[in-house]
Image 1 (tube, rainbow, N blue to C red):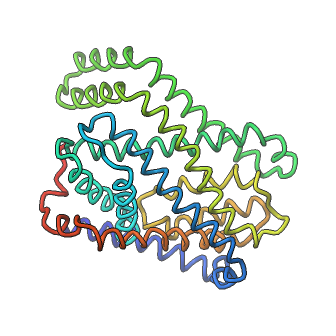
Image 2 (image 1 turned 135 degrees about the vertical axis):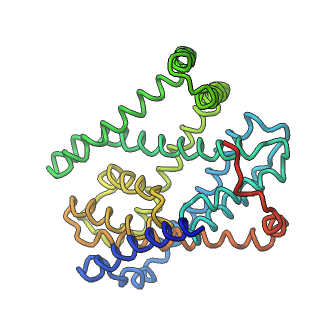
Length: 333
């Protein structure tokens, strides 16, 4: 418990230090938040897209769960679970807290699902989300790369990084979808050579389980492309009134997803501090000096939407179950 408290304190210390530095340096101010009241359609459209993404993410998770569940888990129920999970991830350090809550909720629909599998499904769901994000970056870089580099030399290095990332993802997907059996045989041979049977048995079992749901994972990646594109739309809807002609949507599509990837770092809820600093650097590549303030618009809106997940939590029956469940944090992996 003491170790966890120290780690959480260190995370918030880093986030707080970054926020303090950005404010002191004049790179982060909160005036843009006040100016948003002059652009109600930008706010409403962003809220609409944020809520829509919760629906689509829940659908993606339903596809993955469907590979093992013996009962029909209703999409409506998964939407509530996803929103509640985002609420807990937003108000508590790290994202695992929200995942643990989601495990309990899903088990109420199908008790045959083990905590181990549900946790794995959440991990796979996030992995597919990351794959979709990188593929979106790669596609936009390939399609619009020439236009970007011709207008701004600073994008050359960013595009190279985009191509490296998307190449890694495509190679990994080819190996997974077309070389599944050979990789399993290689793992078996490695186990025989070096031992560590227990560890390799778990890896092999997981690899075999993933092979059985390859069709669902293909759909999950396709859905992830839509989810990540909508994420860029949320960001763009909020910042477009403030960037004038200094930034267009094509350029935004090529670097905003890179910044969104960093929000997965388990430092602080929603990328507090870290996201502000990274987007400050990314926007400086386009000549904009208020990147931290622009990201702050996205940060505040997504946090507000996530916090509204308290509504299904307070009015749902699983609130009592959550308080009574003492074994939630014990997951046999």
